[in-house]
Image (tube, rainbow, N blue to C red):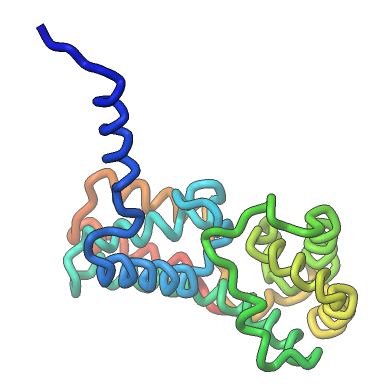
Length: 231
């Protein structure tokens, strides 16, 4: 027979409490954190607080492309094609970010623009100071300017940025500049300069790739052309 007293359980709890919060190899931990931040700035996730990158179609497509490329032989036709589509999506996101940076710098925030536009994966709606006003401004920017270069729902990351601008009392000035610099485009207007992504087709193709595509299939798909077209 085995007996256990309360002191045994207490010792087990003490052992749990003594588990280190930081991994045994701090260098590995910090390298992983640096890589995570670099990944966030490179991909500019539309929903930065979603670690699975599955809540929005554009994030899901980009994440699927990155995962597919990781499984593809470097230098192969499939790898090169995936890289083209990945860079097309990243360029589209950078174009939007550059528009925001242009306005912030025009408002006098040359030194602070990059930090104001940085949104980490730890961003939370609970920490926002004025979420309703920020969301209303985001909707206005999306519907009354061409700052997002897309009719898709605006990226959530800019909700957190607008909350900061509201706190700094420059949100209305930012909106006025956005309307002036990037007026809305009519359907009859030419497509806005930049990259246009056929998201449904891209998702369908990535799903087909994940279903067992190889370099030969990638080669046969080349006739379809890239999904991202420069206007």
